[in-house]
Image 1: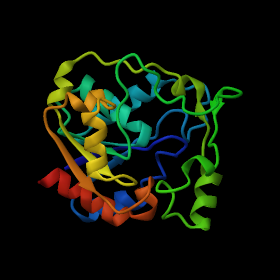
Image 2 (image 1 turned 90 degrees about the horizontal axis):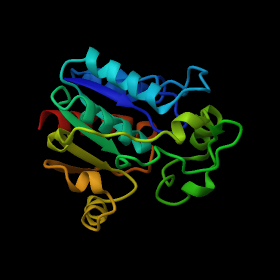
Image 3 (image 1 turned 60 degrees about the horizontal axis):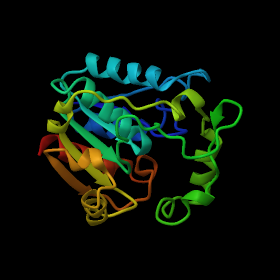
Image 4 (image 1 turned 30 degrees about the vertical axis):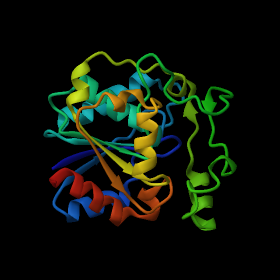
Length: 227
């Protein structure tokens, strides 16, 4: 099975998945981490459209892939399902949910000097970061890449309702499947509320399981792809 892996905000898409890629390959899969424009290539003028194009290029080069989006990049994975509903085998969302059509991608924190810098650990205290030791925190923060303004404030555009028929798997790290179901039932996640095939997978981690639980995350992805 082919996996297209999309890292969330501030992460270098080429490096964030290293351990997960190795484990998926050990399990017999082909894993392709997407290097998103503006996240690791020095392109501070990158836009959401540029990132969309990079994701779709990876999807088009793969064979019926499972598209995995971490955190805010769940929107990019969902955009791929919208653009390629017949070519995407499944969408896996890790610790995040897709934004609806017409909403900004991810302007969650202050954008200054053309970028949205990593805000430090204070906003993520609690379940998000409970499994990160001090060394891990320092390493992630030191490697964090400001998200270009054209990405953070880019507008999500969705057009093909066939995306709702794509198999959708929610990997729940810092929250439980029951919490996720509650948010969806309350109308807080309108895109997933319309999805026809939704599955839930629990993982005992914080918000960044690719760093703290890479082997377990790869095993969960393997199970999601082969179930």
